[in-house]
Length: 447
Image 1 (tube, rainbow, N blue to C red):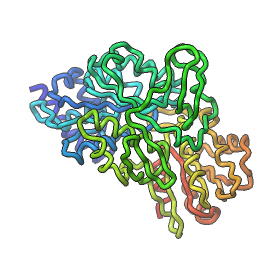
Image 2: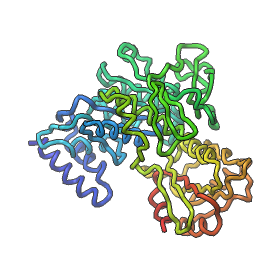
Image 3: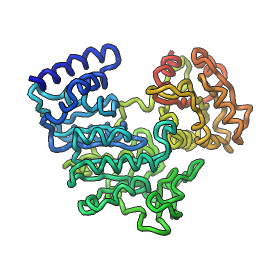
Image 4: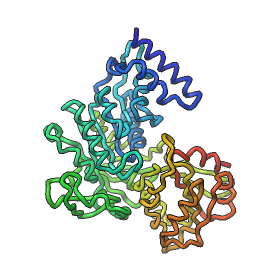
């Protein structure tokens, strides 16, 4: 009777919450507070895939769900991106029968890296995919090594037969595979080949300089981006492992895998290539062949809204690129991608709020972002607009770069941003902002 009540309440609250825009985590939060052990009573499928990491969780989870469902599997996943314990609870209860039976072939759970241990204590995944560990949300996560410790604790609570799918190019992620129980059962590695090391920007701090295990110096044969690359510790055994799934990014937007398969990426980038490689690797773990997964994902356009086409009422293309605030790697990759397009354009950087989850006006993370990537020797970037409540903080940061300051203009009130773009910028325009500001930016810019 208790289980019936919990499932019924979740379904009702989910529907009501969707009407209010709060349906993805609130039902689970309420039910877990009343019945903390309800998730342990559910009958779950054998295939439960957990996806975590600093960047790419939502995108990769969508790719996995797409690859599995298009190949005949019934898949449940938290597509809203609610990735803490309450969001996972909402997912499982709303797709459960009233008897507690989740009649799905697979569950794909996007999991917040800080909450992974709490989630795994209630729901044991059969496979864990870690996308990457990067400098992220200083006020919440501190350093990548702290998040590595959180995930190591999460791995400790799961079954010994869990399958790890790890980013071979990220030393912080590789360090997770040092537990003996994991070594016995093997790890599926994914990564990007050295042929894709076209823009080896290491970021402002070169976070991969020291081994996360023994703290000694690391050497790199090459960098892909940030601290990704072919690394080797000068003291202990940590090094890049040969990936089972390895991709090479070609200039024409194709991603070629080491088994000869090839696919077209709808929005070509090294970051996207990692997400696709990860999805193909874990699809194989779930029983879908690499060729079937690649066929499904070929030219697949994401629905998660990380990139949004914009219209400001003029005959020019606009594209919104959503990155994580307080995450320099995400911004650096977006900036690098814009520069790599080599087309006449304008760049608009919007920081109007810091977080959806908590209040803070801490902006030191702006100094971690390498805005100097926008120094343009070819004069493709005509205008740069700094917008939002924190336009002054952005102005100070940009003043410390070698960017031609005459290109830069400022718009503090987003209500004036659309007219400013129409009158004071040229070429295609790219807007960089975060999840917290996405909706307000789209509202301000759409004609």
